[in-house]
Image (cartoon, rainbow, N blue to C red; front, side):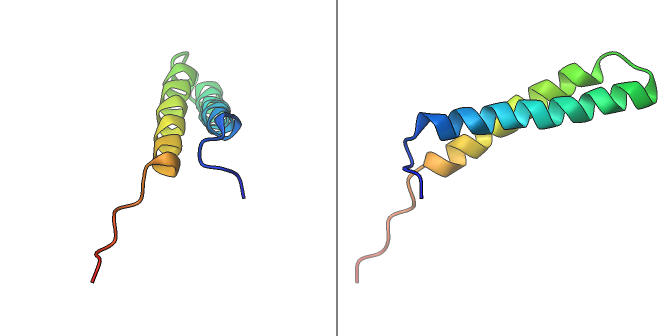
Length: 66
């Protein structure tokens, strides 16, 4: 199990999001004969990578003490 504050895990999530969604955008560009979807894919991948990192490191809600 990796520690929550590991910067390489955050870096990996960001890079994976950019690569995966950038590749999807590139494939859609080739298929639809456009030239802007790769940029859209990269931006969406970066946003989702940031979101995944934020979800992984945010603190869990406090439990009720009874």
